[in-house]
Length: 419
Ligand SMILES: *Cc1c(COP(=O)(O)O)cnc(C)c1O
Image 1 (cartoon, rainbow, N blue to C red):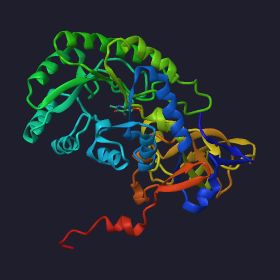
Image 2 (image 1 turned 180 degrees about the horizontal axis):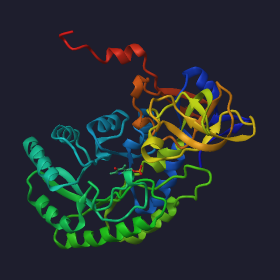
Image 3 (image 1 turned 60 degrees about the horizontal axis):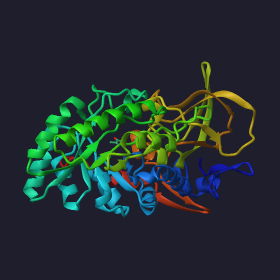
Image 4 (image 1 turned 30 degrees about the vertical axis):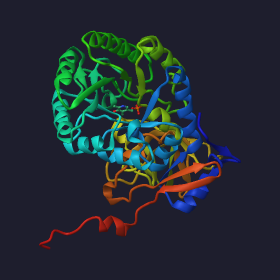
């Protein structure tokens, strides 16, 4: 469910007409719907409400301050993977005691920063990282609250680049090695063991891998508790998928997911934590782009738009597909065409041979489900200006990240001193 729809033939974000935004901001841009963000957060929260969940939004999915502040107001915490993300979460008002620090390669500087802030939990991914964290904490005279991230060796059946829970992936500690690393954690002076965590991948469209992983995790929790480790928090990660194309089967509903959590974790008396990213933000954002040119090349009819793979990397990176809609309904009858960006790479294609009314030059298109892993991955390849982000709330809008100027782009660099 989302709040993007046609009104009198014009695509709207809530009460705001997309052409009006394009006029005000220029294209391309991301547009987020507050109501949709709120809806998705509430649906997820309410499904789990009886389990008293701690929901830490995965900031890497969308790190826009407006999005984070909106979620903060709803009570969300944050799951961060760098000091930069931690600073964003804090700047958006999310208190440190609701922030979890994940990631396989935290630096000591990042650990120090997080400890100074009083972060809720570090999810630690190796014995080496554990030793480094203990050292940093000991120097500061504190103990770092730690959950070890274990790797349950399950196939998440998602795209290889976003599968994280197989034993060959770089993430987590192998389950059969976990007891040893917990024993180490119990001995290290700067570590306070508080729990365990798992995250098996992203864009999961089936619940079976969650059930398998959570059953394995449950067994491990019982064993670790028997060994005397205080596993009082269980962080179950994120990963629930969202529908990208109209023809896609509906992904698992949060309520069905919650049933699995209840079945596997409900009686453990632990604080349950969740790190959804895509599920909250995915359908809450669209990418708006303008058609520059239409050109025929061999057997493909290309529609060249002003957004590129630097603005939305998912198609080039993950072979992802986004639903593409004309902002003005009721153009020509559908034809087969390929939508491509201006970046000098053959992978800068958003959709190949899709059926869409042939747009005229200057027309606007909307790429749906672009609220997660869209703007947060955007870059300025080809020296294109970083794409702006706008937030809509009812009939209001606010530019939460303006498009930089070319002067700002150039001012960020300098010639070597000898030139
Ligand atoms: C990416 C990530 C998430 C969020 O995944 P989604 O698929 O967006 O829900 C949660 N936890 C960790 C550790 C991650 O790396």
